[in-house]
Length: 397
Image 1 (cartoon, rainbow, N blue to C red):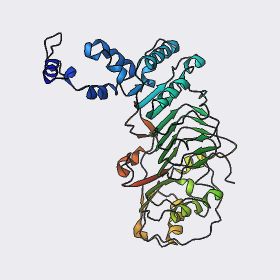
Image 2 (image 1 turned 30 degrees about the vertical axis):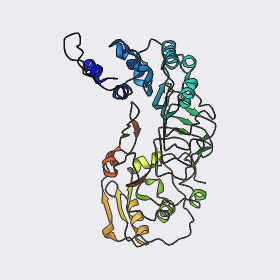
Image 3 (image 1 turned 90 degrees about the vertical axis):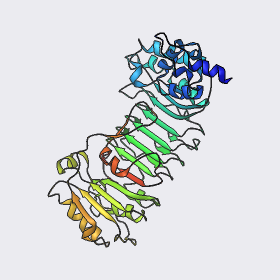
Image 4 (image 1 turned 180 degrees about the vertical axis):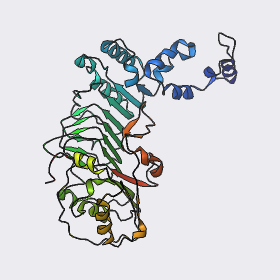
């Protein structure tokens, strides 16, 4: 396009006589701007000027968000809009795809096309996918093998039910997985490429323990969940094959690790060779007794462990006797009293991990520590492992 025509475009006047500088921007920049809008608003820009008529068809994002579904008259209206959107827009690689079903009473109609929308976005392909079943009963069952893409890097599932194993082995680029308010009723969660796994307000199986296989995991968050704790970190048979966290520098735990002999805690320390800081967060005793039952001890062989360079911080209420147990056991491994710090805990309500690509926020119970740990998508600089184990509903056999 000639410089003259570009200059003429930039000098076009709006209805009130002011210069239309927005239309003078390069098309690539306009598409980036439109990609941040809900898809319905992006389509509406077609009435602004002739240049905008077909821009919405090229936007590298699909955003049908929970916050915008209430603006439709019903599930049929939302479904018709999304189906038309996918039919008329150009099939191009997507940076982001967010899909949310309608939140009305007609559940079957609300989720009628959800699987089709997901399949479409993965075929484009899409880099970051967020799926929300706007149903408080978690009735939408994620079809087996639906999430399969070598281009997918981030996945967020909300109010989804899973019964078949969540096997993301074919998603070779998947780095981030977030599950919120989901029913996780499967035997395994598997992903060899996964770096960050965050699970909040979810229900696990009540009669067996879901196994998590993620050999490259550098951040795990489990908070406010129900059911039996996933196998990997807590019980005897998991601790005996606990992986080495070779990059882990900061470890945050709450009181689930304080068994009779602190075996679970010692196992973590033995498998964290470069750990610099350990923080243990104690709930008040009355909350601890109500939420968690931990009575077992772990018969672990005492391997070589020297803690002289480790800094330990325990956050608890005054007079908590569990602190003395931690100090005595860690002291037996060489931890000096100067490296041990006690302070009152922050008030933990529900934490927030800022989400840079979806329209909402990922809720968790660790936001009080966000600034301290500087949690971001680039965790190579300072790796942090967050383990909140308030998931117990049975014995630790």
